[in-house]
Image 1 (cartoon, rainbow, N blue to C red):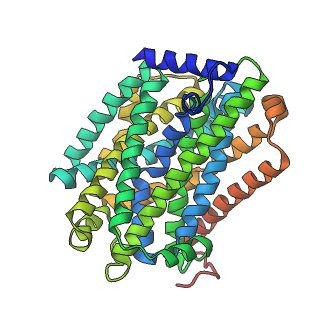
Image 2: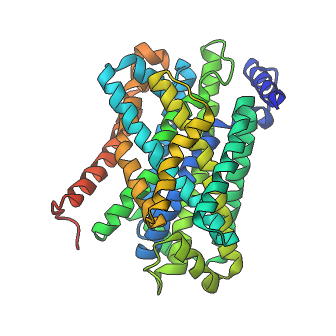
Image 3: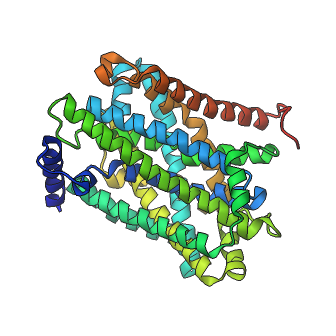
Length: 429
């Protein structure tokens, strides 16, 4: 399997030197953004998107679109950081921030990694338990075994893992293309939902923050910078510019697909549940309700995509957790131990009898609150010429990134105010 990585690296060098041309050569640079895009289609998205579509129809589609655009910008900046500096975001934070700040950043990032794994593990387990009529805890054990088996391939170079994750992303995308064809979508309402910002009430705000947390993922921002560092052999600034161009194209395409999958989730839930079943808020209920409404095929496709999402995102979450720990603390632990650390909270939640879908939504809110940490660090480093040289971002990109961070911080502030009982004047109910 190492031959795949060696072949890909040799092919990239040939493209950069001009010896190889065409779209097949460009495909060799694809991989990091596809892996990062999994974080934007994880089971936490299923929980928040089902609640958004069932409760509010197509109204919250604009939140999905906004979150996806913010995600594109920050994933592009993260990839840029790794390509230009040869270091990932956690390593740069360790090297440039005071030690107390580094410890706080690491602690927040670890909590986010555990919240991520909670969503991913529960999602895969729910899918397996429903599809094969298994106890939830058994579904979690199967998910743990399958994800660890896939993680073994990480030691064989970057290409095998990219191909495996890419195949799982393809399964998720095809499943939701099928769902869109099966469900009777209200396309005019979809268009209005995408371009009309509206938060009908306080519950919609909670779901909106959950969508942001489930879409713009803290661990994905850390991970992308690590996936691009040293992946292609870059000899000079011209090579680096070419790699950046290929990376930006991949980010836009990969996250556009992820965004469309998220929109399809909301649209399917709006079509199937909003009229007459708006109380549907759980993945299990959605599955059982889909069968009589849209048929067994739609329900089966839904579970298939959920299992593919749970397995792939759990693998990616573990990779990110390893990178975060290694970057901040300069400690690398065995992958089985990392897998164990991050999945313990998920097993604890199930053992305690906590509602699985509610746990998924709460985990996404935790992620949204943790998100400003890597976002702010990324903005700081991307604009520093002593770190980025001629590839430091200009004022327009910096302003857009700051506005994206402000949007997320504002939603988080409003959510916290709501949680502590502070009245929010512009929300009704």
